[in-house]
Amino acid sequence: LRSPGAVGLPRLDPSRVAVVGHSMGGAAAFEALRTDAGFAAAANLDGTVHTGGRSPVNRPFLLLGAGEHGRPGADPTWQRAWRDLSGPRRWLSVRGAGHLSFTDYARLLERTGTAGEEVTLGAADAGRVTRELVVAFLDERLRRYGPRLDTAARQDPEVVTHGR
Image 1 (cartoon, rainbow, N blue to C red):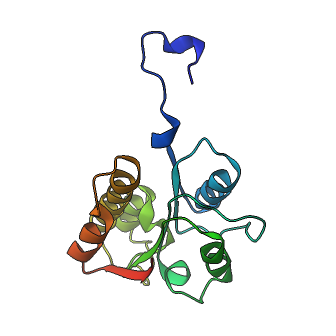
Image 2 (tube, helix red, strand yellow):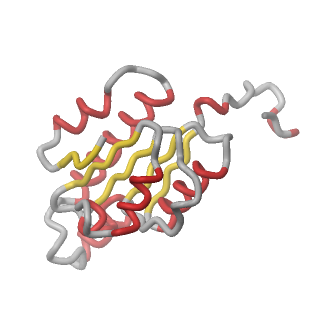
């Protein structure tokens, strides 16, 4: 793949392209992986999945959530999405994180004291955990560095594994 403005740049390797999104972006990541062969993997960061049941997704997918999205059975859309995933899949949650903990917005909420009492994980820790888990997933699945996600998940006591 090459655009006219990409003169001198290396070609994009579709086997190393992932789509990652938060909230509605996470739902879009699921749909993009399900419908577009141009993505090799995807991750949904605490987003309700508004699709599913039409065709299986046979490429790597990460469900990373907090609150209702982090507990099997609490969000039926994640249960449906989980069943639609026929490729390598992981379902993790982060204790003490809230919906916005997976974004930079969490720092603003923390500074203004409006993060909500259900959010007990500090914004800096939430950002670090999110980065470590997403990078480990992408390294493992796109760069083929070995089982990095399990190692990253075990290193953080806030991370709970729900499914593989």
